[in-house]
Length: 89
Image (cartoon, rainbow, N blue to C red; front, side):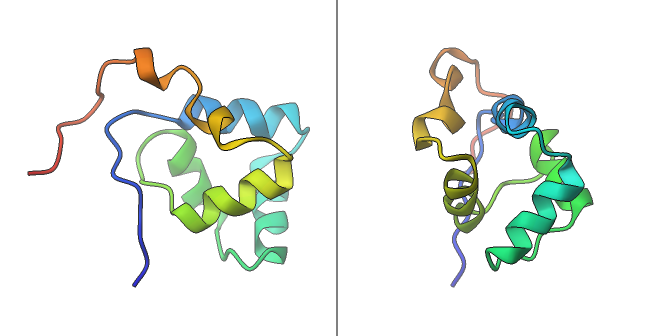
């Protein structure tokens, strides 16, 4: 069973910042993710960055490896944001 994060904050800005800091386009990042066995297309990744789709935990794990960052980098500043979607009941 695949698990997904329940999103009530938008980490899209952090995903975009990390990608740009690494000098990767969305297309090149997706090619790199596919080399790490994450079958993610550019349109799906774009939805992650735009906050339109929940990111899979397996993708976060691979992104951390690709970027050489910590998990904290994905969640930076989210503790001061207001929730951007209603919680699931």
